[in-house]
Image (cartoon, rainbow, N blue to C red):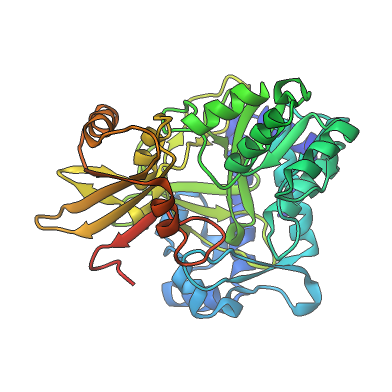
Length: 438
Ligand SMILES: [Zn+2]
């Protein structure tokens, strides 16, 4: 079975009887597994476990299949390709922040699917034909996200200005000239852009931007409230903020609707699970690792892919009218999970708290192994303003109920330390724990 990627069809699905959607999802899953079975990795896997895709009769059956990890793919990416080279239209590369980059081949139909996925995301944000977005994201260099945002807008009947990242002066010139009413970009850059405007007597709130779709950095917490960065963006631009989440390997993205309560799980595009540390599926509301099986992918059809990201599924009906479950905010990376005095926390939770202290001008976290299944955590803050360790300690403890070591240093010293590694971004988390130390 193949889904017809049209907006009308998708909206019809949103209002259909859940039992009918369920049956069609089972059919889509069977087709997806048939396609996956054309890739050498899954061909061998299905043979080893005796799986015949036609034996799949319920969505529950997916839980009997083995999980696929990023390292499975890194060992031999070509073993996951399920179409001939003649069918490939685009080859994306994963950003490779946690290892080597993986090439992900897209067929022509995969590109249509990618655009459709993003069209549904924009539709949920209230974007309609005639709207215009400034895309402050990378469209080249083998990144897929920028292409997805672009083709989704075009397919919806809206328009896109392919501005790319950086160069605030040029971005403001485009905003002045072309009057977009939406922005897509990385939150910290969009804040920088707004601040640049203010420094040059331009009022971002009067620029006419009503919708901001963010990628790459969290702007919402597990309880759906905006982080300090998200709130700053909302205030300064006077626009509604939407988070989106995706993974290049999955060719699939989740975007919030106007109710801001998680990214909708589009039933024709993906099956999403949350698992515990032993790989057991968890019920809605429980946090754990996000596992996704995209549906309908031809070129690189993954099955139960472990993303390494931590979140939870919200299954209560959404006030927007779509009866589909949502994936909540990304709460952290599994590999960065910290055990601290009986509590589990992620570096992002500490940064969310620090963002609310205006004196904090830079910050990183160091984790070291300690005894009794606990990590030692040092939070190193850079500032040139008056700030003492006790004030920060009390603030962090009030937010997280635990008190890690707080060290305060001059801003430039901390920034210089964070620049090591030479990546595109400042390094914020230094994992010196024995099992994770590189
Ligand atoms: Zn909704």
